[in-house]
Length: 310
Ligand SMILES: [Zn+2]
View 1 (cartoon, rainbow, N blue to C red):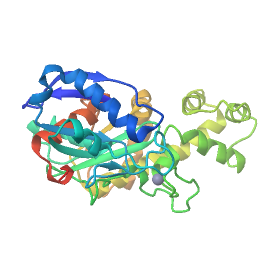
View 2: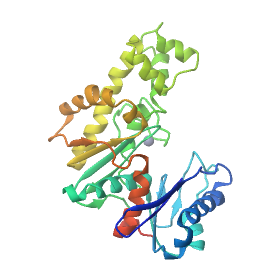
View 3: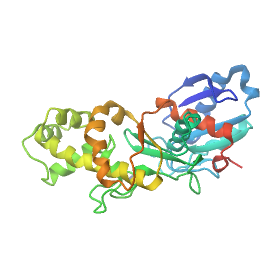
View 4: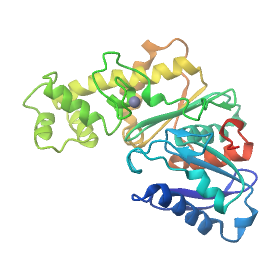
């Protein structure tokens, strides 16, 4: 969790981070967030006039609750985040999905350059994203719009996704799912046997990092895996580019940033054959890991109506 105090020009003044509590989360998460906020705001607590909150989704921005948080919440329970925050800090609130917030933060820092349309994609343990269209953040009816990690890149539905759907981009290409794809392809005898990839699979040591390392070492099964992955990545990027017609595509996340040369030279050139129009300018996040924090603050500062809690 990260909390920052911003001034009226959208500049970050002070900042603190803390660990997200893992137990009794419907109470402990809002509590920990408030403690962190008080620590960073200090004597300025009473002068805070708006608050932007970026959260994992899916969420309900009308009610200010996180609907499903499989990584942190008790099964099936909602986290009524905003109700708790309001008890101690009674200001105007803006509540949005972290990737939508990141998209807004990245766009906000480029709007002086004249950028009006921006797509943000993060490839890490999952795949997330957000879109700013002509200066407006796409939020959807309750704040879960532009969930581009869950676009369908394989209608056969070979891989199931953590969200419950099938064939989603994230189910093939995120850091958590690259090894799952490798395992399934090995089990279905669609990759060469007797290779380093199979050995790692048998030893249960397969993760995304090892998949990349084996690919770089030209392990034959890993090369087969990555031939598929390159097309899946390109299909996902091209689909969002074709859908939103943006000037800039910002790509971040640990998988992308950790393997930038691979993406630049082996994935991005494959996008062209799927494209309707020109490729947008590809850029890295200005704010890095802090993009959701900046975006939440800038949404509050600008009074983005779709994210405002009434
Ligand atoms: Zn999904």
